[in-house]
Length: 312
Ligand code: UDP
Image (cartoon, helix red, strand yellow):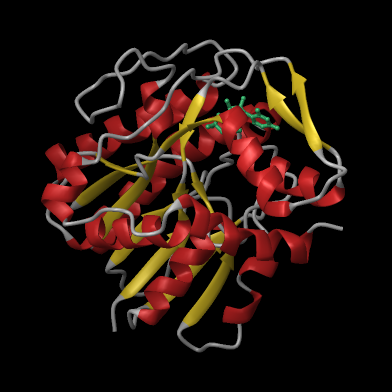
């Protein structure tokens, strides 16, 4: 039975990864410090003997007894509001945390996959974004703490691959949604769903003409699994190329939720908010045989059930 360490296990993506790797027959060690994660997301796993949970901050030395076959590093604040509130922790988990986990992978001869992000492209000047685009990031802007930590993550991961022959995988994750997102994480989808359900104003930032491309969590998890099992060590975009403006996205959610009391209101655009974002997934298609299967309509419907159960 392969033994797999998942950091950020109590978070949105980490908890879905725990489910998937348990289903694939792995022994899963989930690690989290609950800075932004919640044990509610993995409470259903605690009775399983194939699942262990360690409460630990991976920016400090990471000790795991026994053998390890795979490491998935998904610990980090991930929403712009979270990393503005926790800039130092965000830098530390992306930089020091990644260093610790690469050291662990080297010591255990484990294969490691690190969660990078479309934020490495910053406010992109190339559209859609291909993996060979180097990005347009403001290192001293508010998003710099996340973007630069993730860029460092990629650099140190390549260094461990090149100099220590560690088996590494780098995924660049684009906007993803689904159950277990934190209702108050400040991202567009949780904000719009909870505002629509409560009959409040949907807070569109700027004029809402900025674009994003939203991927359903099950598709993302499939992409992660395939990348981990592949032999490709260079970064790969995983995301859904279906692009939409934020205003249209808010309108879709308004229509789906169907609460006549809710309507769109406009708020100032945050500094350095990327104007466009859409993954070029040619590489994922060719190398992993992967593409998203769940369209936005279907994915949003499934996700609405979760938000209705969480929003009070
Ligand atoms: N956004 C918005 N209203 C909100 C939250 C976000 O209009 O209440 C916008 C935000 O300015 C950005 C887009 O929605 O242009 C996606 O933001 P999110 O925080 O979900 O993640 P990002 O893609 O910026 O990392």
